[in-house]
Length: 239
Length: 298
Ligand SMILES: Nc1ncnc2c1ncn2[C@@H]1O[C@H](COP(=O)(O)OP(=O)(O)O)[C@@H](O)[C@H]1O
Ligand SMILES: [Mg+2]
Image (cartoon, rainbow over all chains, first blue to last red):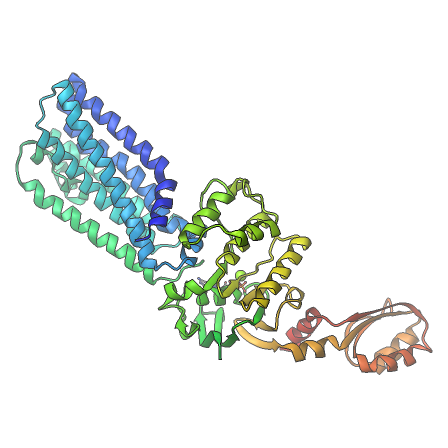
Protein backbone atom coordinates (compact mmCIF):
# COMPACT_ATOMS: atom_id res chain seq x y z
CA UNK A 1 0.00 0.00 0.00
CA UNK A 2 1.12 3.57 -0.69
CA UNK A 3 0.52 6.06 2.12
CA UNK A 4 1.04 9.20 0.04
CA UNK A 5 -1.58 7.93 -2.42
CA UNK A 6 -3.97 6.95 0.39
CA UNK A 7 -3.68 10.46 1.77
CA UNK A 8 -4.34 12.05 -1.61
CA UNK A 9 -7.33 9.82 -2.23
CA UNK A 10 -8.69 10.57 1.22
CA UNK A 11 -8.39 14.30 0.64
CA UNK A 12 -9.91 14.35 -2.82
CA UNK A 13 -12.94 12.29 -1.72
CA UNK A 14 -13.43 13.82 1.69
CA UNK A 15 -16.23 16.19 0.69
CA UNK A 16 -18.50 13.53 -0.82
CA UNK A 17 -17.75 11.05 1.94
CA UNK A 18 -18.31 13.61 4.66
CA UNK A 19 -21.57 14.86 3.22
CA UNK A 20 -23.07 11.42 2.65
CA UNK A 21 -21.95 10.21 6.08
CA UNK A 22 -23.33 13.29 7.78
CA UNK A 23 -26.72 13.03 6.10
CA UNK A 24 -26.97 9.31 6.78
CA UNK A 25 -26.22 9.82 10.48
CA UNK A 26 -28.60 12.73 10.91
CA UNK A 27 -31.51 10.86 9.33
CA UNK A 28 -30.77 7.74 11.37
CA UNK A 29 -30.63 9.70 14.64
CA UNK A 30 -33.86 11.48 13.73
CA UNK A 31 -35.75 8.26 12.99
CA UNK A 32 -34.68 6.73 16.30
CA UNK A 33 -35.30 9.81 18.40
CA UNK A 34 -38.77 10.70 17.13
CA UNK A 35 -41.56 8.64 18.67
CA UNK A 36 -43.75 8.54 15.55
CA UNK A 37 -41.02 7.15 13.29
CA UNK A 38 -39.47 4.70 15.73
CA UNK A 39 -41.43 1.63 14.64
CA UNK A 40 -40.84 2.47 10.99
CA UNK A 41 -37.13 3.04 11.54
CA UNK A 42 -35.83 -0.36 10.50
CA UNK A 43 -37.92 -0.95 7.32
CA UNK A 44 -37.55 2.66 6.21
CA UNK A 45 -33.92 3.22 7.01
CA UNK A 46 -32.29 -0.20 6.81
CA UNK A 47 -34.74 -1.51 4.26
CA UNK A 48 -34.35 1.34 1.81
CA UNK A 49 -32.63 4.61 2.67
CA UNK A 50 -29.28 3.36 3.87
CA UNK A 51 -28.38 1.54 0.64
CA UNK A 52 -29.68 4.34 -1.54
CA UNK A 53 -27.65 7.00 0.22
CA UNK A 54 -24.44 5.04 0.43
CA UNK A 55 -24.75 4.15 -3.25
CA UNK A 56 -24.27 7.83 -4.01
CA UNK A 57 -20.86 7.79 -2.38
CA UNK A 58 -19.89 4.35 -3.66
CA UNK A 59 -20.72 5.14 -7.29
CA UNK A 60 -19.17 8.62 -7.43
CA UNK A 61 -16.05 7.73 -5.48
CA UNK A 62 -15.64 4.21 -6.86
CA UNK A 63 -15.61 5.56 -10.38
CA UNK A 64 -13.08 8.22 -9.47
CA UNK A 65 -10.70 5.80 -7.78
CA UNK A 66 -9.58 4.19 -11.04
CA UNK A 67 -11.60 4.69 -14.24
CA UNK A 68 -12.23 8.38 -13.65
CA UNK A 69 -8.55 9.12 -13.29
CA UNK A 70 -7.60 6.98 -16.28
CA UNK A 71 -10.27 8.71 -18.37
CA UNK A 72 -9.13 12.13 -17.23
CA UNK A 73 -5.47 11.21 -17.68
CA UNK A 74 -4.32 12.16 -14.21
CA UNK A 75 -3.58 8.50 -13.43
CA UNK A 76 -0.40 9.05 -15.47
CA UNK A 77 1.07 11.04 -12.59
CA UNK A 78 0.36 8.33 -10.05
CA UNK A 79 1.84 5.68 -12.31
CA UNK A 80 5.00 7.58 -13.20
CA UNK A 81 6.00 7.10 -9.60
CA UNK A 82 7.64 3.74 -8.99
CA UNK A 83 4.41 2.14 -7.77
CA UNK A 84 3.05 -1.20 -8.94
CA UNK A 85 -0.39 -1.06 -10.47
CA UNK A 86 -1.58 -3.65 -7.97
CA UNK A 87 -0.39 -1.35 -5.19
CA UNK A 88 -2.37 1.53 -6.68
CA UNK A 89 -5.53 -0.58 -6.95
CA UNK A 90 -5.00 -2.05 -3.51
CA UNK A 91 -4.52 1.38 -1.93
CA UNK A 92 -7.69 2.70 -3.57
CA UNK A 93 -9.56 -0.39 -2.37
CA UNK A 94 -8.28 0.11 1.18
CA UNK A 95 -9.50 3.69 1.04
CA UNK A 96 -12.96 2.61 -0.09
CA UNK A 97 -13.32 -0.07 2.57
CA UNK A 98 -11.93 2.09 5.36
CA UNK A 99 -14.21 5.00 4.54
CA UNK A 100 -17.22 2.67 4.60
CA UNK A 101 -16.06 1.23 7.91
CA UNK A 102 -15.89 4.83 9.12
CA UNK A 103 -19.38 5.64 7.91
CA UNK A 104 -21.02 2.56 9.41
CA UNK A 105 -18.92 2.63 12.57
CA UNK A 106 -20.12 6.15 13.15
CA UNK A 107 -23.71 5.06 12.44
CA UNK A 108 -23.42 2.27 15.00
CA UNK A 109 -22.23 4.76 17.61
CA UNK A 110 -24.85 7.35 16.68
CA UNK A 111 -27.72 4.85 16.65
CA UNK A 112 -26.78 3.32 20.00
CA UNK A 113 -26.35 6.79 21.52
CA UNK A 114 -29.66 8.06 20.11
CA UNK A 115 -31.33 4.92 21.42
CA UNK A 116 -29.97 5.58 24.91
CA UNK A 117 -30.75 9.29 24.92
CA UNK A 118 -34.32 8.91 23.68
CA UNK A 119 -34.84 5.62 25.50
CA UNK A 120 -36.14 4.17 22.24
CA UNK A 121 -36.09 0.59 23.43
CA UNK A 122 -33.85 -1.08 20.83
CA UNK A 123 -31.27 -3.56 22.01
CA UNK A 124 -27.79 -2.16 21.42
CA UNK A 125 -26.71 -5.44 19.84
CA UNK A 126 -29.60 -5.27 17.38
CA UNK A 127 -28.58 -1.80 16.28
CA UNK A 128 -24.96 -2.89 15.88
CA UNK A 129 -26.05 -5.90 13.85
CA UNK A 130 -28.24 -3.74 11.62
CA UNK A 131 -25.24 -1.55 10.87
CA UNK A 132 -23.03 -4.55 10.20
CA UNK A 133 -25.62 -5.83 7.75
CA UNK A 134 -25.97 -2.46 6.03
CA UNK A 135 -22.19 -2.24 5.82
CA UNK A 136 -22.03 -5.56 4.01
CA UNK A 137 -24.43 -4.27 1.34
CA UNK A 138 -22.22 -1.21 0.93
CA UNK A 139 -19.15 -3.46 0.76
CA UNK A 140 -20.67 -5.53 -2.04
CA UNK A 141 -21.77 -2.35 -3.88
CA UNK A 142 -18.25 -0.96 -3.51
CA UNK A 143 -16.74 -4.13 -4.92
CA UNK A 144 -19.06 -4.06 -7.94
CA UNK A 145 -18.26 -0.41 -8.61
CA UNK A 146 -14.56 -1.04 -8.09
CA UNK A 147 -14.60 -3.91 -10.59
CA UNK A 148 -16.25 -1.67 -13.20
CA UNK A 149 -13.78 1.09 -12.39
CA UNK A 150 -10.84 -1.26 -12.81
CA UNK A 151 -12.12 -2.81 -16.02
CA UNK A 152 -13.00 0.32 -17.99
CA UNK A 153 -10.85 3.23 -19.13
CA UNK A 154 -13.80 5.56 -19.61
CA UNK A 155 -16.02 6.92 -16.84
CA UNK A 156 -19.11 6.55 -18.96
CA UNK A 157 -18.62 2.79 -19.25
CA UNK A 158 -17.68 2.37 -15.61
CA UNK A 159 -20.74 4.33 -14.47
CA UNK A 160 -22.91 2.74 -17.15
CA UNK A 161 -22.17 -0.78 -15.92
CA UNK A 162 -21.26 -0.72 -12.22
CA UNK A 163 -23.32 2.36 -11.39
CA UNK A 164 -26.33 1.16 -13.33
CA UNK A 165 -26.22 -2.31 -11.79
CA UNK A 166 -26.19 -0.81 -8.29
CA UNK A 167 -29.14 1.45 -9.08
CA UNK A 168 -30.97 -1.53 -10.52
CA UNK A 169 -30.38 -3.54 -7.34
CA UNK A 170 -31.74 -0.67 -5.27
CA UNK A 171 -34.83 -0.21 -7.44
CA UNK A 172 -35.59 -3.93 -7.29
CA UNK A 173 -35.17 -3.84 -3.52
CA UNK A 174 -37.64 -0.96 -3.25
CA UNK A 175 -40.18 -2.71 -5.47
CA UNK A 176 -39.63 -5.99 -3.62
CA UNK A 177 -40.11 -4.34 -0.25
CA UNK A 178 -43.81 -3.99 -1.00
CA UNK A 179 -44.05 -7.76 -0.60
CA UNK A 180 -43.74 -7.08 3.12
CA UNK A 181 -46.98 -5.12 2.90
CA UNK A 182 -48.96 -7.96 1.46
CA UNK A 183 -48.22 -7.79 -2.26
CA UNK A 184 -47.14 -11.43 -2.39
CA UNK A 185 -46.51 -11.42 -6.12
CA UNK A 186 -43.51 -9.19 -5.49
CA UNK A 187 -41.75 -11.69 -3.25
CA UNK A 188 -39.79 -13.11 -6.19
CA UNK A 189 -38.42 -9.67 -7.00
CA UNK A 190 -36.47 -9.84 -3.78
CA UNK A 191 -34.47 -12.74 -5.18
CA UNK A 192 -33.25 -10.53 -8.01
CA UNK A 193 -31.40 -8.06 -5.82
CA UNK A 194 -28.39 -8.49 -3.57
CA UNK A 195 -29.81 -5.83 -1.26
CA UNK A 196 -32.25 -8.41 0.15
CA UNK A 197 -29.29 -10.48 1.36
CA UNK A 198 -29.27 -7.99 4.20
CA UNK A 199 -32.13 -9.56 6.14
CA UNK A 200 -32.88 -6.75 8.58
CA UNK A 201 -36.16 -8.38 9.63
CA UNK A 202 -34.30 -11.45 10.77
CA UNK A 203 -31.90 -9.26 12.73
CA UNK A 204 -34.85 -7.50 14.39
CA UNK A 205 -36.33 -10.80 15.58
CA UNK A 206 -32.84 -11.84 16.72
CA UNK A 207 -32.73 -14.81 14.38
CA UNK A 208 -29.56 -16.34 12.93
CA UNK A 209 -30.41 -16.72 9.22
CA UNK A 210 -29.06 -13.25 8.49
CA UNK A 211 -25.43 -14.20 9.18
CA UNK A 212 -25.00 -16.64 6.30
CA UNK A 213 -26.73 -14.22 3.93
CA UNK A 214 -24.26 -11.53 4.86
CA UNK A 215 -21.44 -13.95 4.12
CA UNK A 216 -22.70 -14.07 0.53
CA UNK A 217 -22.50 -10.27 0.33
CA UNK A 218 -18.98 -10.46 1.72
CA UNK A 219 -18.08 -13.02 -0.93
CA UNK A 220 -19.45 -10.80 -3.70
CA UNK A 221 -17.37 -7.91 -2.37
CA UNK A 222 -14.15 -9.89 -2.11
CA UNK A 223 -14.49 -11.38 -5.59
CA UNK A 224 -15.38 -8.08 -7.28
CA UNK A 225 -12.60 -6.15 -5.54
CA UNK A 226 -10.27 -8.90 -6.72
CA UNK A 227 -11.52 -8.62 -10.29
CA UNK A 228 -11.04 -4.84 -10.30
CA UNK A 229 -7.49 -5.10 -9.00
CA UNK A 230 -6.47 -7.90 -11.36
CA UNK A 231 -7.88 -6.31 -14.51
CA UNK A 232 -6.43 -2.92 -13.64
CA UNK A 233 -2.98 -4.45 -13.23
CA UNK A 234 -3.09 -6.23 -16.59
CA UNK A 235 -4.88 -3.96 -19.02
CA UNK A 236 -3.55 -1.37 -21.47
CA UNK A 237 -3.76 2.14 -20.11
CA UNK A 238 -4.09 5.10 -22.48
CA UNK A 239 -1.86 7.37 -20.42
CA UNK B 1 28.05 -0.48 -23.17
CA UNK B 2 25.50 1.64 -21.34
CA UNK B 3 22.29 0.79 -23.11
CA UNK B 4 19.39 2.81 -21.73
CA UNK B 5 16.56 1.86 -24.08
CA UNK B 6 16.35 -1.25 -26.16
CA UNK B 7 13.37 -2.35 -28.21
CA UNK B 8 13.29 -5.64 -30.04
CA UNK B 9 10.73 -6.17 -32.79
CA UNK B 10 8.49 -3.99 -30.66
CA UNK B 11 4.98 -4.10 -32.09
CA UNK B 12 1.60 -2.84 -30.95
CA UNK B 13 -0.85 -3.78 -33.63
CA UNK B 14 -4.14 -1.92 -33.37
CA UNK B 15 -5.13 -3.43 -36.74
CA UNK B 16 -5.91 -1.47 -39.91
CA UNK B 17 -2.24 -0.52 -40.14
CA UNK B 18 -2.44 1.40 -36.88
CA UNK B 19 -0.01 1.21 -34.01
CA UNK B 20 3.74 0.58 -34.17
CA UNK B 21 5.47 -2.19 -36.04
CA UNK B 22 8.75 -4.04 -35.64
CA UNK B 23 10.56 -1.22 -33.91
CA UNK B 24 14.21 -1.95 -33.18
CA UNK B 25 15.68 0.93 -31.31
CA UNK B 26 18.76 1.32 -29.17
CA UNK B 27 19.46 4.42 -27.16
CA UNK B 28 22.69 4.72 -25.21
CA UNK B 29 23.01 6.59 -21.97
CA UNK B 30 23.49 10.28 -22.55
CA UNK B 31 21.96 10.33 -26.03
CA UNK B 32 19.15 12.64 -27.00
CA UNK B 33 16.95 10.96 -29.55
CA UNK B 34 13.93 12.44 -31.26
CA UNK B 35 11.03 10.75 -32.93
CA UNK B 36 8.98 12.66 -35.47
CA UNK B 37 5.90 11.82 -37.43
CA UNK B 38 2.53 13.16 -38.33
CA UNK B 39 -0.49 12.78 -36.07
CA UNK B 40 -1.30 9.11 -35.74
CA UNK B 41 2.20 7.99 -36.73
CA UNK B 42 2.60 6.07 -33.45
CA UNK B 43 4.70 8.38 -31.27
CA UNK B 44 2.42 8.18 -28.23
CA UNK B 45 2.04 4.43 -28.66
CA UNK B 46 5.83 4.12 -28.57
CA UNK B 47 6.09 6.20 -25.40
CA UNK B 48 3.26 4.33 -23.66
CA UNK B 49 4.88 1.02 -24.45
CA UNK B 50 8.19 2.19 -23.00
CA UNK B 51 6.32 3.36 -19.89
CA UNK B 52 4.77 -0.08 -19.47
CA UNK B 53 1.27 1.35 -19.86
CA UNK B 54 0.46 -0.80 -22.84
CA UNK B 55 1.41 -4.37 -23.53
CA UNK B 56 3.10 -5.00 -26.89
CA UNK B 57 1.38 -7.45 -29.21
CA UNK B 58 4.82 -8.67 -30.28
CA UNK B 59 8.42 -8.07 -29.30
CA UNK B 60 9.47 -6.27 -26.16
CA UNK B 61 11.23 -3.23 -24.82
CA UNK B 62 13.74 -2.79 -22.05
CA UNK B 63 14.96 0.07 -19.93
CA UNK B 64 18.49 -0.66 -18.74
CA UNK B 65 17.84 -4.35 -19.32
CA UNK B 66 14.55 -4.43 -17.38
CA UNK B 67 11.41 -5.34 -19.27
CA UNK B 68 9.20 -2.27 -19.48
CA UNK B 69 5.97 -4.23 -19.07
CA UNK B 70 6.71 -6.93 -16.50
CA UNK B 71 9.09 -4.82 -14.42
CA UNK B 72 7.34 -1.53 -14.86
CA UNK B 73 7.50 -0.48 -11.21
CA UNK B 74 11.29 -0.85 -11.33
CA UNK B 75 11.83 0.80 -14.70
CA UNK B 76 9.77 3.82 -13.66
CA UNK B 77 12.31 4.57 -10.99
CA UNK B 78 14.55 5.52 -13.91
CA UNK B 79 12.02 7.49 -15.95
CA UNK B 80 10.63 11.01 -15.95
CA UNK B 81 7.57 11.19 -18.20
CA UNK B 82 5.56 13.88 -19.91
CA UNK B 83 2.35 12.35 -21.27
CA UNK B 84 1.01 13.35 -24.67
CA UNK B 85 -2.20 14.54 -23.12
CA UNK B 86 -1.83 16.63 -20.01
CA UNK B 87 -4.54 16.38 -17.36
CA UNK B 88 -3.93 17.02 -13.70
CA UNK B 89 -5.77 15.58 -10.73
CA UNK B 90 -8.33 17.80 -9.00
CA UNK B 91 -6.09 19.61 -6.60
CA UNK B 92 -6.32 23.24 -5.64
CA UNK B 93 -3.17 24.82 -7.04
CA UNK B 94 -0.10 23.89 -9.01
CA UNK B 95 1.79 23.96 -5.74
CA UNK B 96 -0.40 21.31 -4.08
CA UNK B 97 -0.05 19.17 -7.16
CA UNK B 98 3.74 19.39 -7.27
CA UNK B 99 3.99 18.71 -3.55
CA UNK B 100 1.71 15.68 -3.88
CA UNK B 101 3.79 14.45 -6.76
CA UNK B 102 7.01 14.86 -4.79
CA UNK B 103 5.45 12.81 -1.99
CA UNK B 104 4.55 10.05 -4.44
CA UNK B 105 8.15 10.11 -5.67
CA UNK B 106 9.29 10.20 -2.06
CA UNK B 107 11.40 13.25 -2.83
CA UNK B 108 11.48 16.73 -1.37
CA UNK B 109 11.39 20.20 -2.82
CA UNK B 110 15.02 21.15 -3.28
CA UNK B 111 16.82 23.92 -5.13
CA UNK B 112 16.61 22.00 -8.39
CA UNK B 113 12.81 21.98 -8.24
CA UNK B 114 12.78 25.69 -7.48
CA UNK B 115 15.21 26.28 -10.32
CA UNK B 116 12.85 24.44 -12.70
CA UNK B 117 9.87 26.44 -11.48
CA UNK B 118 11.73 29.67 -12.11
CA UNK B 119 13.11 28.56 -15.43
CA UNK B 120 9.60 28.02 -16.76
CA UNK B 121 8.17 31.02 -14.92
CA UNK B 122 5.40 28.98 -13.33
CA UNK B 123 2.85 30.67 -11.10
CA UNK B 124 2.26 27.99 -8.50
CA UNK B 125 -0.66 29.76 -6.90
CA UNK B 126 -2.73 29.51 -10.07
CA UNK B 127 -5.90 27.42 -9.90
CA UNK B 128 -5.01 24.17 -11.58
CA UNK B 129 -8.33 23.93 -13.44
CA UNK B 130 -7.92 27.40 -14.91
CA UNK B 131 -4.41 26.82 -16.23
CA UNK B 132 -3.83 27.48 -19.91
CA UNK B 133 -2.48 24.72 -22.13
CA UNK B 134 0.99 26.22 -22.00
CA UNK B 135 0.94 26.52 -18.21
CA UNK B 136 -0.13 22.90 -17.87
CA UNK B 137 2.60 21.81 -20.25
CA UNK B 138 5.22 23.69 -18.26
CA UNK B 139 4.01 22.19 -14.99
CA UNK B 140 4.14 18.73 -16.58
CA UNK B 141 7.71 19.41 -17.70
CA UNK B 142 8.71 20.37 -14.16
CA UNK B 143 7.12 17.13 -12.95
CA UNK B 144 9.20 15.09 -15.35
CA UNK B 145 12.50 16.88 -14.83
CA UNK B 146 12.22 17.07 -11.05
CA UNK B 147 12.41 13.28 -10.84
CA UNK B 148 16.13 13.67 -11.72
CA UNK B 149 15.60 10.41 -13.57
CA UNK B 150 18.38 9.15 -15.85
CA UNK B 151 15.86 8.75 -18.69
CA UNK B 152 13.29 11.28 -19.80
CA UNK B 153 10.43 10.23 -22.05
CA UNK B 154 8.78 13.36 -23.36
CA UNK B 155 5.73 13.05 -25.59
CA UNK B 156 5.37 16.26 -27.59
CA UNK B 157 6.86 18.29 -24.74
CA UNK B 158 6.66 21.68 -26.45
CA UNK B 159 2.96 21.69 -27.34
CA UNK B 160 1.43 24.96 -26.29
CA UNK B 161 4.72 26.61 -25.32
CA UNK B 162 5.51 30.07 -26.63
CA UNK B 163 8.84 30.58 -28.46
CA UNK B 164 10.60 31.89 -25.36
CA UNK B 165 9.56 28.87 -23.30
CA UNK B 166 10.46 26.58 -26.18
CA UNK B 167 13.99 27.98 -26.00
CA UNK B 168 14.00 27.55 -22.22
CA UNK B 169 13.02 23.94 -22.79
CA UNK B 170 15.77 23.36 -25.35
CA UNK B 171 18.34 24.90 -22.99
CA UNK B 172 17.18 22.59 -20.24
CA UNK B 173 17.43 19.51 -22.46
CA UNK B 174 20.99 20.49 -23.42
CA UNK B 175 21.80 21.05 -19.77
CA UNK B 176 20.58 17.65 -18.59
CA UNK B 177 22.22 16.05 -21.59
CA UNK B 178 25.53 17.50 -20.40
CA UNK B 179 24.90 15.74 -17.09
CA UNK B 180 24.50 12.41 -18.85
CA UNK B 181 20.71 12.23 -18.87
CA UNK B 182 19.17 10.28 -21.72
CA UNK B 183 16.25 11.94 -23.46
CA UNK B 184 13.77 10.42 -25.86
CA UNK B 185 11.30 12.98 -27.13
CA UNK B 186 8.66 13.16 -29.80
CA UNK B 187 7.36 15.96 -31.92
CA UNK B 188 5.22 16.49 -34.94
CA UNK B 189 7.29 19.53 -35.80
CA UNK B 190 10.30 18.35 -37.71
CA UNK B 191 12.58 21.30 -37.19
CA UNK B 192 12.13 21.58 -33.48
CA UNK B 193 14.35 18.61 -32.69
CA UNK B 194 17.35 19.65 -34.74
CA UNK B 195 18.89 21.71 -31.98
CA UNK B 196 18.79 19.05 -29.30
CA UNK B 197 18.93 15.62 -30.89
CA UNK B 198 21.87 13.40 -31.71
CA UNK B 199 19.56 11.33 -33.79
CA UNK B 200 16.06 11.70 -35.17
CA UNK B 201 13.83 8.83 -36.13
CA UNK B 202 11.21 9.39 -38.73
CA UNK B 203 8.04 7.49 -38.03
CA UNK B 204 5.36 6.86 -40.60
CA UNK B 205 2.37 4.56 -40.10
CA UNK B 206 4.09 3.04 -37.09
CA UNK B 207 7.31 2.20 -38.89
CA UNK B 208 10.68 3.90 -38.59
CA UNK B 209 11.35 4.75 -42.23
CA UNK B 210 14.43 6.90 -41.80
CA UNK B 211 17.02 7.82 -39.21
CA UNK B 212 18.86 11.10 -39.40
CA UNK B 213 22.15 11.11 -37.51
CA UNK B 214 24.91 13.72 -37.35
CA UNK B 215 26.36 12.75 -40.74
CA UNK B 216 23.00 12.97 -42.39
CA UNK B 217 22.32 16.29 -40.67
CA UNK B 218 25.41 17.65 -42.36
CA UNK B 219 24.40 16.26 -45.72
CA UNK B 220 20.95 17.77 -45.37
CA UNK B 221 22.39 21.12 -44.39
CA UNK B 222 24.75 21.05 -47.34
CA UNK B 223 21.85 21.65 -49.67
CA UNK B 224 20.39 24.99 -50.59
CA UNK B 225 16.78 25.67 -51.34
CA UNK B 226 16.80 28.44 -53.92
CA UNK B 227 13.59 30.23 -54.72
CA UNK B 228 13.78 32.13 -57.99
CA UNK B 229 11.27 34.28 -59.82
CA UNK B 230 12.32 35.23 -63.33
CA UNK B 231 10.99 38.11 -65.43
CA UNK B 232 10.60 36.11 -68.62
CA UNK B 233 9.43 32.63 -69.43
CA UNK B 234 12.63 31.92 -71.41
CA UNK B 235 14.69 32.37 -68.27
CA UNK B 236 12.22 30.23 -66.37
CA UNK B 237 12.48 27.44 -68.97
CA UNK B 238 16.25 27.65 -68.92
CA UNK B 239 16.41 26.98 -65.19
CA UNK B 240 13.79 24.26 -65.43
CA UNK B 241 15.81 22.33 -68.02
CA UNK B 242 19.13 22.75 -66.22
CA UNK B 243 18.03 21.68 -62.76
CA UNK B 244 16.10 18.51 -62.41
CA UNK B 245 15.47 18.63 -58.69
CA UNK B 246 12.73 21.15 -58.15
CA UNK B 247 10.38 21.25 -55.21
CA UNK B 248 7.99 23.90 -56.44
CA UNK B 249 7.17 25.10 -59.93
CA UNK B 250 4.70 27.79 -60.96
CA UNK B 251 5.00 28.56 -64.68
CA UNK B 252 2.41 31.35 -64.61
CA UNK B 253 4.44 33.49 -62.20
CA UNK B 254 7.75 32.10 -63.50
CA UNK B 255 8.43 30.88 -60.00
CA UNK B 256 10.73 27.94 -59.38
CA UNK B 257 12.34 26.46 -56.29
CA UNK B 258 15.39 24.27 -56.86
CA UNK B 259 17.29 22.14 -54.41
CA UNK B 260 21.03 22.11 -55.03
CA UNK B 261 24.08 21.06 -53.07
CA UNK B 262 26.36 23.84 -51.87
CA UNK B 263 28.98 22.75 -54.37
CA UNK B 264 26.61 23.41 -57.27
CA UNK B 265 25.66 26.91 -56.20
CA UNK B 266 28.40 28.36 -58.42
CA UNK B 267 26.95 26.61 -61.47
CA UNK B 268 23.55 28.09 -60.71
CA UNK B 269 25.00 31.58 -60.31
CA UNK B 270 26.78 31.29 -63.66
CA UNK B 271 23.53 30.26 -65.31
CA UNK B 272 21.71 33.16 -63.67
CA UNK B 273 24.11 35.70 -65.27
CA UNK B 274 22.06 35.66 -68.48
CA UNK B 275 18.65 35.56 -66.81
CA UNK B 276 16.61 38.51 -65.71
CA UNK B 277 15.46 37.94 -62.14
CA UNK B 278 12.62 39.53 -60.18
CA UNK B 279 13.31 37.80 -56.90
CA UNK B 280 15.67 35.24 -55.42
CA UNK B 281 16.27 33.73 -51.98
CA UNK B 282 18.63 31.09 -50.58
CA UNK B 283 17.78 28.88 -47.63
CA UNK B 284 19.78 26.06 -46.11
CA UNK B 285 17.75 22.87 -46.39
CA UNK B 286 16.01 21.98 -43.15
CA UNK B 287 14.58 18.73 -41.88
CA UNK B 288 11.18 19.95 -42.92
CA UNK B 289 12.08 19.96 -46.61
CA UNK B 290 13.98 16.76 -46.24
CA UNK B 291 11.10 14.87 -44.72
CA UNK B 292 8.61 16.34 -47.09
CA UNK B 293 10.70 14.87 -49.90
CA UNK B 294 11.02 11.56 -48.09
CA UNK B 295 7.29 11.38 -47.63
CA UNK B 296 6.70 11.84 -51.33
CA UNK B 297 9.17 9.10 -52.21
CA UNK B 298 8.10 6.49 -49.65
N1 LIG C 1 -6.26 2.08 -27.93
C1 LIG C 1 -6.25 2.17 -29.26
N2 LIG C 1 -7.06 1.41 -30.01
C2 LIG C 1 -7.04 1.48 -31.36
N3 LIG C 1 -6.25 2.29 -32.07
C3 LIG C 1 -5.41 3.09 -31.39
C4 LIG C 1 -5.37 3.08 -29.96
N4 LIG C 1 -4.43 3.97 -29.56
C5 LIG C 1 -3.92 4.52 -30.68
N5 LIG C 1 -4.51 3.99 -31.79
C6 LIG C 1 -4.19 4.33 -33.18
O1 LIG C 1 -2.81 4.10 -33.38
C7 LIG C 1 -2.26 5.10 -34.22
C8 LIG C 1 -1.09 5.75 -33.55
O2 LIG C 1 -1.56 6.58 -32.51
P1 LIG C 1 -0.58 7.47 -31.64
O3 LIG C 1 0.54 6.63 -31.15
O4 LIG C 1 -1.41 8.14 -30.63
O5 LIG C 1 -0.04 8.53 -32.70
P2 LIG C 1 0.75 9.89 -32.49
O6 LIG C 1 1.07 10.02 -31.04
O7 LIG C 1 1.98 9.75 -33.35
O8 LIG C 1 -0.14 10.98 -32.98
C9 LIG C 1 -3.40 6.05 -34.55
O9 LIG C 1 -3.91 5.71 -35.81
C10 LIG C 1 -4.40 5.79 -33.47
O10 LIG C 1 -5.70 6.04 -33.94
MG1 LIG D 1 0.54 11.59 -29.72
